[in-house]
Length: 240
Image: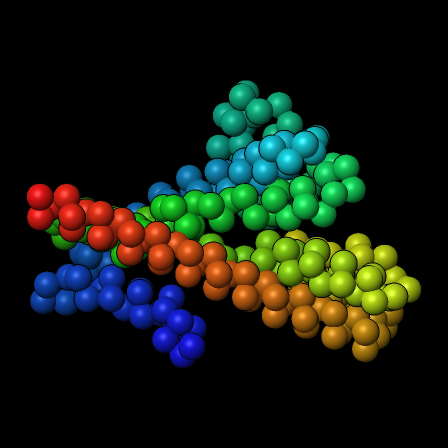
């Protein structure tokens, strides 16, 4: 269990160990460039995958906010529902799941497919010369660790969907939407900043966050399992 919990850290350290004679300043610079480029590609792609998840589930999209620095104006030419500008890097603020929590979960989860099939495997397998290795590892970071980056955001939201359903099933007098949010700090401020929050709120939010942490780990573990398959497949091809 301890090894599984520490896997995201040990994978990062293992990636750094792939530099002969240690990590140099130039390697760090190339990693930083890879991270920066990857982040600016990943952010709008992440938001578009939220929209795709909703549409695949049968929902509808009205507004997808993307900050200008992530190419929102250009993307708006292809996706009319994109709104240029947001308080966040990006946010799906206008969507209708038809009241289906399954569609809601698919909408929130969809971007993390990239973590599983690209992010973690790239962190494991980025190779080549020092330049390509540094760029690859840097590019992998925001995608591989997206679940953990999103603990107070998407992962909390997924946890809150599940836990709020359980709370309603157990007879809570509040609607599930009370605890559902893609911004946990804002939710805490809204509930407890003016004294409206109570013990039940605190317990449900804590449980939802805990479930969100488990979801983030599960996403990462699935990516690691796929990375192992990629590595074995590559090894088999090489030996043949």
